[in-house]
Length: 334
Length: 123
Image (tube, rainbow over the protein chains, first blue to last red):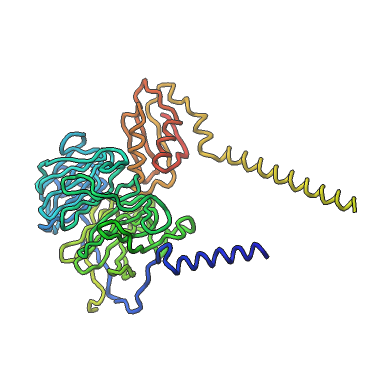
């Protein structure tokens, strides 16, 4: 009887903790959601129009203010495309010099068109002009301020601060526009607000909120730009059991989020091989699954959304392509 | 009453022996099933001048993790090149001929990346 009582008490504590959002809240499904909301696959770019060779394991993607897209891939290059997929240029090669990479992963574009690329192995970030001319670099290996251990993703806010998802340091680093460290956001951990476990994606909303893809806590976390955690959405409490591999109510390794001008949040739920649409408050709206996903590789990895919010671009590393999805937001006519 | 106490003691002893047996069996099973045990025994495989090691890492489905494994393996002194094959859950390391790279070194690197190597095969 004692054991039964203990189990019941534990369950009650867990339920109370969940209800009080101590461990965050799982997403909610709005009662009056639009049946029309969703995604439609309109194109899959394989990079065959790139003179130096088609995509090989594309992973990073970012949209510039001029609407162009920048994609990083395993050929250690950055490729620039028009929004329609026309090739606009590329740079980069294997190496450790300026404009060279060991593993180009994260990419972000500032308001002035400057392109920043993170190197997952060299633990540095390189800045380029929009056409690829090298400008400077910053960062080194380590866990101190301004140091990285596998920088997986980058985002830049409207005032020029950069946010780096520092994968093995389990944190987000906020850097000034000269690359010097400003502050650390989040802390390593599995439970509680602000705890991060292998973050892989980061984005800043038009409302100046930082959204972090906290991949191995199976959740998205919201922070203000000064680093105070404010909200969590997705799957978290039962990260030990059961794994939400096919769950329709939680994430399995969400690796990135992109926010449209309408506030809609698009999530790369890589372990479930899908893109999930959330409302600005984190409620589930719709999803789209990769029909021919490789079950052995998590995908999609990173996302970018067009300036008008009508299109989401997703890197599908497993199939060496960029998926182009047309967005139908909630409230659209059938 | 003495016989009752004796019976109870006997039962406790038997229960303790069973627990000890169970624990020993579990430890033995863990030693056999552990991915580390066979790896340690193969630690001298590189002494023969073999230059490629194929490491199987279960659960290496996420590219960020696979690249993390690649990064940590590349830092092992003597490792010249690392390739990861996500679909096969495998990493291949190319080792300099005179380098003393053991299974233990590779296992440690994989562990630092947050994983366990379930098999290391030298070629």
